[in-house]
Image (cartoon, rainbow, N blue to C red; front, side, top):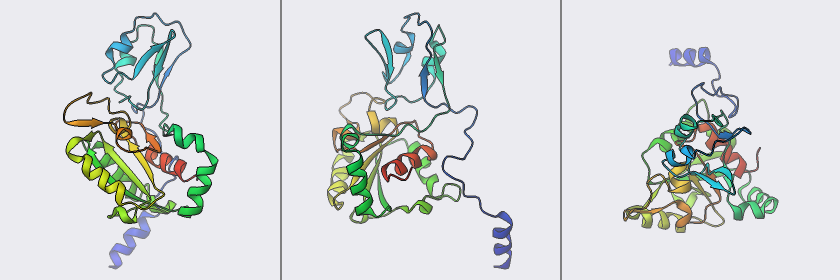
Length: 241
């Protein structure tokens, strides 16, 4: 026991602030469009596997909820107008939540008391988002320091965190989990599959994005999103930023 205590004291505090960690050099974050001359080759549009890039009124738009940050558009752009950045703070509130804005933030704060219990449901993911989500509980990110924790029962949860595109076999389980939660509650769609459903396209085996089944309050893009991106979304929800 004494050896364990010595090791703990020698290690010291390893927990870091959620936005203080260094982003790896090869990390692919938000894609930006430079203000240069586009050659209108549209190779970025045709190369995107999730159809996240579109042309509207002569301008390119990127749907980051659908983007999997594969980098094909950046590689194919003849004019080199598309660039990857290191920005990972891409979580956004849904249009309903954003419109309610401050009022909802105050209501959440008054009801939840700046603490949040989360129930996670894997609706059909590849487990990449789940691995990143599990990292939130390790000593580096230490999710509990913010008053946030995962719970085993939906009856104890304030938020439903959903990963993966919603498959038909898991639709009922997802709905039953949501209905078992006390109200008011929140729903977070984690990753490109849950946020957009465009990674797998349309198939008889899946229902699509989470917002086709449940009302989603916050979207966290990424494939998978970094733990810091998940923390940003959670703290954004709790009005702690």
